[in-house]
Length: 421
Ligand code: GLU
Image 1 (cartoon, protein in one colour):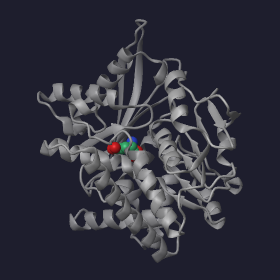
Image 2: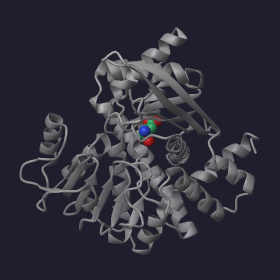
Image 3: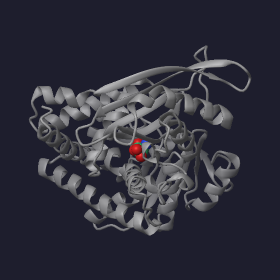
């Protein structure tokens, strides 16, 4: 059973490469990151102790342009996970038609005795010191023309603010195009905060069109109520979908008549969790996945839909806002059962697409309105969906394989045109 995200990534690349009859040396290149930097750095905590953190920045492939992808703060981050995530970024960026390769970073939040540290429980000052120290450690390999980080799990615009400040200090000039997902006041883009969810909404809209369905009257469950999941729940709610269940790391809530999502968001902002929301029953994260709903949105972490529960999934559409939530074995089962999986590298590509817009705005120094960002995002998502849908039809495969086939073709073409292979 594939529980290691890097193995899952390699399997996905292998099966698409077979369809394309790629030569073995090309497959080998696509299966591994070009460069992985492992760093260790000391950080003084508020109680006076010093913790040595370990982190990574992986640059998977830079044929299409500078590498791009977020930085994750989590106690379970491993080198292999970061490598997988960087590979997924390569094919996500190519799927979205962006002039970028794929990169990803992560810090493993563990105490000196190996026990997990929850980044959410640290003080602002501690997070700032960790973020600045990580930038110091990876500064040599990042930059607007090299590798452009952004937020990911448990990182946010505030952290990007510390990071871009640290990088600019090191260089001796203001370099806003080094990080995306920044606060608006320092070169962030309108619409970046909601972009992953907005992009996912556009992708789902296109998918519904292919089967002549509309949002009104459908039901949905959303696993993960962070930046992507909470806004997706809101957009679905606003489009007339009955969102019956949502969850976060502490547990889930269910109401068969539909949850009032703006109120749940308010509740989460005040209490830090959705659990305890009035008028809803408590359910577990795993129960949420197998609910009788039309749309399932995994928006948390990897390995949620596996051989253990794939057969029990009742949703007709799975919108993967998380990276890697479905294992390759589960994919086969879902495809056999007629579930349309909108794969991560397509479904959540709205985030990096607006990151690209942010980078363009930083480089040109000309800033766009929210309407402009939204319009361009919608256009990009429509084109990305069309490419993937057509490739899936052409090869007679599911949407994930369609996304891999069409994006691998792009990356390989660029590698060939540059004379890299
Ligand atoms: N972390 C996000 C992702 O996985 C965004 C990456 C970016 O904006 O560069 O797609």
